[in-house]
Image 1 (cartoon, helix red, strand yellow):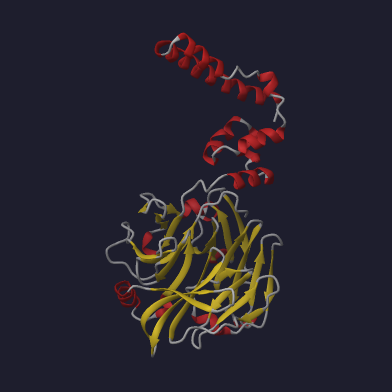
Image 2 (tube, helix red, strand yellow):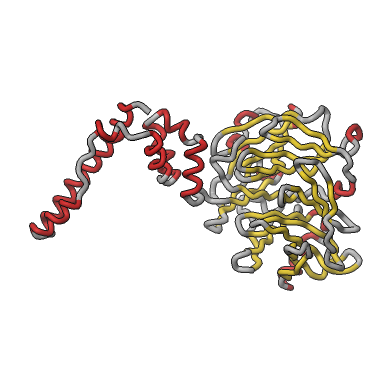
Amino acid sequence: MSSNTKGRLVQTTKNRFSKEKKKNVKNLQSTSSSSSFNRQLAMTKPDMDPEIWSRMPEELLEKILSLLPLKAFLNLRSTCKNFKSLIFSPSFISRHSSGSSLPFSSFLLLSHPQCYNQFPLYDSGLGAWRSVALSHSDLLPAASTAPSFSLLSTSNGLFCFSLPSSSSFLVCNLLARTSRIIKFPASPFAFELLTLVSTPVGYKLFMLSTGSFSNFSAFVYDSNDPSWRKFDGFDPILSDNYHQEGVFFNGCLYFSTPEPFSVVSFDLESGKWETLNSELPGDLTFVRLVCGEGKLYLIGGVGSNGISRAIKMWELDQARNWEEVENLPEMICRKFLSVCYHNYEHVYCFWHQGMICVCCNTWPEILYYKMSRRTWHWLPKCPSLPVKCNCGFRWFSFVPALYAPV
């Protein structure tokens, strides 16, 4: 940053300070004795000399700016060209992330065929639906002319869309207005269980191929090494569980299989599949997995002959055993079971900001468990949905993250 730019910034601060100082002096003269006025005036900061402050070291200025709330710093970008690049500086990101809390709200995002190219947003902080929904053009400015596209997965502020017409995926960060096009491993290419996993240094895409040419292989894309890796040896028994994404836990993606129920993991680095050597609870009718705050949870129906009589939650403890931690209250359980009509293939779960969300593809409400309060609640139906709406309710966790790299 040039000394002239620093000088202008300091001079602006000086002018504002002078105005506040004059106002304070006037107030003190009218309300305080002369001795009190002198004490207050002595405590007032002296004028800032632009020549001195323009020589401030860059490192010190960056540290000071990192202490500002993010929204305040964003408003300062127009005052200096260097500020626009500073916001993506690794050192600035590290300082700001370690010294500030989350500056944005978090949302539950709804994707539904009858939303007409929009994504309604539920503000989980305010506990209310936002009056303005996200539009496809907001998320996909580079692909707004695509004849068809669909949201497949979200993670840490990143979105992953499928663009079938161009045989590619699009990963984008709405807040940073950055995106990347990723071509399919082959064309045509059929896939399922796509899962986006975001990390502090990048992200990975995982999916299973369903085409005969690949014999049910797993594919992994790493943003730090932009290429697809193919791994063999996958058992196609996971293919019935098409609404539930993989659950990222301790470097692996975890999946539950249909009957006979089991939990399997896939190592994103080595491509190795393993079956979790932990005995599952008895009398299960369906199994879903959720990971949050470093813990792996199992949500399952309990009953007989494929009919659930209860829904419970277990946590994988340090001894690798499933410990029961919650039992869905009877009245809420009855409603949820009537909603899914015992068609458990429509049920999927995910983690969102201290909540475990249990959803049904055929129902417009979310059943969620608040971890801090240990209570169950229903999320109200989106007011912008038609009175009569078909199945196809797909919910996602959206936690805006400016620094999530694309």
